[in-house]
Image (tube, rainbow, N blue to C red; front, top):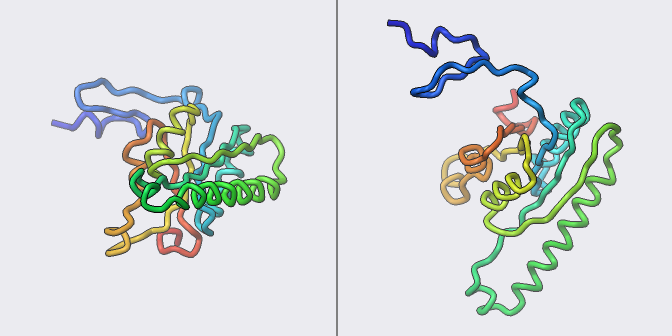
Length: 177
């Protein structure tokens, strides 16, 4: 017996217990692209990619930087913590403004925002609130102990996002070659 998924056209998608569905280009519209940035070289490369993509399809590009919230007890232990977070937000706003100021693209609207919270959760929540059609983000390609300690924001976003996620590796990484 031939598997039903094996007989489908490449554009057909089959979910367990469901009929094959053929997607057409008319069904796939991308009007809002969310691009989370951490101001690393990798995220700047992803921003460039997202900008070109948004320009080519006439989509709005939303740049977002997530400031990691600290636990409530940390603010009690260190009264300066709130001031540190506010300073981090100010610095992030300056960086976002610089990124947008460098944009010389036509046919694309770019805006930015700062969000707070656990980074991957904040990105996911913001993507839903903004009704993003696509998330474009870079990946640092952490492996081994570094991955075990820090995890992967990109992987968590991919696994839980309500919309497609496009991961852009850094040009110098092994994945890019």
